[in-house]
Amino acid sequence: TQSTWAEEEFDRRMIAFFKRTDLDGWWVRKGLQELHSHDMIPEPEICVEALKACRRVNEISVAIRFLEVVRINANCHDKKIWPWLVEQIQPTLCELGIPTPEQIGFDKPEFYYETNH
Amino acid sequence: MNDNPSYLDFQDYPMPAVRWAPNTPEVLSLREKEKGDWKSLSVEEKKQLYRNSYCQTFAEMDAPTGDWKRILAYCLYGFSVAVSLMIYSYLFVFPSTPETLNQEYTDKMLKRVLKQNQGPITGIASKYDYEKGEWK
Image (cartoon, rainbow over all chains, first blue to last red; front, side, top):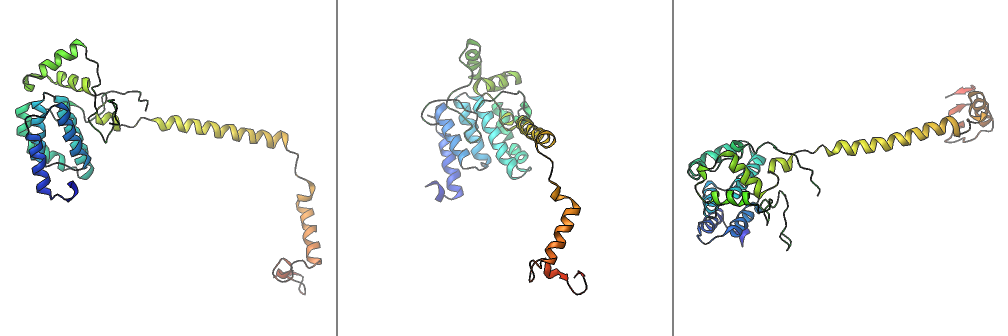
């Protein structure tokens, strides 16, 4: 089960999942949700594969959302992790044309909504 | 989540089941453009694509709403109503304290207590030295 996998095994499985070519939008989101439910900061390799999977299904909003989530997770632990992670995946970000949340202005609130939960 | 495809901005579930914006022609045409190279999209278009799929960014979700001010106002309002009622009651409704509570009367009561030797072992009279006529 997932809780007994070693770290490398987990990374390998995640990368293998995102490398699949038959993923559609729902499966990409499911995979990212699973990644998020582990409450972890993914390795740069996993991030790169996830972003490429988003590219394959033509969903830039999912990619930006994923980066936002990773940023928040990283900032909870240590302020230095997020810049390092961005540096590691910068080649993929440049190649695919995905902005980080800071570049696009999503690290500060932009609009105010009357939320009625 | 929970059977029905619904939209929810939630920290634990970052990608909801449905998109936020309805499928108007502008939204669909932008999505067509999304299928091409993402580097050709401007920053405004990328932001618009995001807003088409999601209502609030994470920063907006977590931002403080200032709701506590409204709640504090209600609490203080209730508190002030209670306090004003009490002030009114003290001034106009309650009778004044009886005369048995002024200093002269209570002094005399104390003397009577000591004469009667009430509480001789552990009470008030045990603290009074009867031979010398003063408090221990």
